[in-house]
Length: 515
Image (cartoon, rainbow, N blue to C red; front, side, top):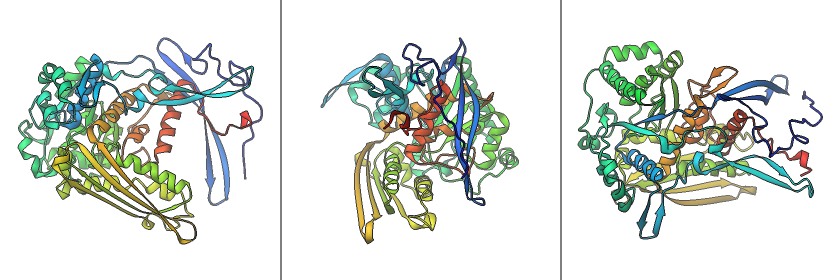
């Protein structure tokens, strides 16, 4: 086994590498425009042929632009449950509103948002007299300069022309007393006409579709680009986020850029999400896919690469699936052979209504179905035959009465010591949009931040893989390597932010403290 030896204690503006409270910017070089951080990347490469490990050290310079821009947010599905809830939630937080419910007075907050309400471990504090050790945590939003969600400028498209006050009332997500206070503002917000190919969503959505763009593929892309250009004139940077209905999978996949160009030119029927994505790429704005359809075809991703586009997706990971990735981490990480996972959902919002048609449900089933793959692949002792050794089923039913309050039931059955079995059942009542919207905010805040970060002079992309933490079916710049594990995704994202800020990622061995 080959290892690289590195003996001694590195001293950096402190005693034995300890944090110096008098200078919180000690590790990153700050000037008026940038944070510049030198980062040593450490990883290990295993050679199957030579049966050995090689430790690799790479030096990088990470540069982050400090200026936080005015961010324009364009939602596809502005008038849906998620879209109307996001707009109302941002307005309520911006104005510091409170409202009455049967449970008492509620205050606007960003609970559920990783950037706004979570903290990260950034180091240790040593009491020089007693030698006692304490952790230091910092709000994620303070690690690097980030957009304040209250400063979002929001618009977007919807197949329904209903104003956002009526849309929010129809969604039945937020309390009437809150909506009453926001009525005048929400009534003034009306969605832009939307692209739609009715063949790719459920037929039960037809009664909503009164605000539709017409024309050829190219004409619709051009109109969407005009809408984006108007937002660009009002703001410094624009992000498009698809939070509309799940579309049917488009098959066969669009393999090349030439195939994509031919389909646009020949006016082949394409899902609306592909047209929005093309418009975003051509305007060089970020496109985030919050639904499970396969918008990011190989030809689309390559088109983004060629044109400086930035993409991230797919499908919000907010409730049941996030819990599932944590449970699989726990069970397999503890050495239990997770053998069966059965997930049942019923919900009554418009998402559930759309998914009640099989062609749309299959997209969701595919998205939910892959979240256990990397956990299984990580343990050849428990799973010598790979993915086929686990039974994983997903069921979704539409029950209008429960509205946005989704019920999620899961059963996890594992094989344990000496032929025994262990079954864990969970019952999760998820207020669907109130869980999804904070994650949408995180995607927007961090997506914008990632456009200001360069590694060794190069920007990120075309896929913003560090946003994988927020997606059920994440895509990366290396299609053969995808991580779904909740703990690994969070650890990777936190470490990247810390590295950009000049804070050394913690190796968590605690060796130096005699743990």
